[in-house]
Image 1 (tube, rainbow, N blue to C red):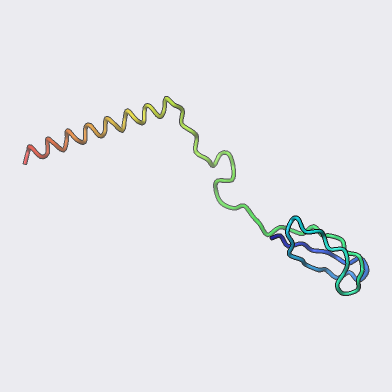
Image 2 (image 1 turned 90 degrees about the vertical axis):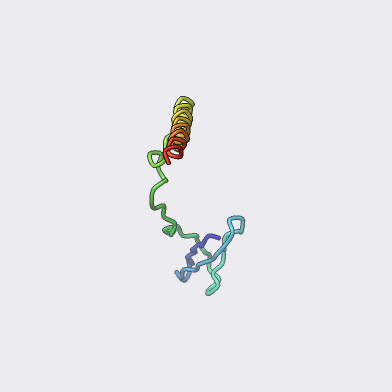
Length: 91
């Protein structure tokens, strides 16, 4: 839940309140019963690291690239299996 700050217009004290988004804002000061105004404070949430920009994501492969990858992987599999059979017959 977010933390909101309110300042009293009468006494100047700052009050903090943890409230839901749906909760109504505070209107009266607990200390002097004066009117409160909501303050805009700096957020403690920072986005750091990779993955937050469009350039940080990998490109999606096209259907042509997927076919090439499937063909090359099947070629590797067939050459590995033939190479393994040749190794077994050499022993």
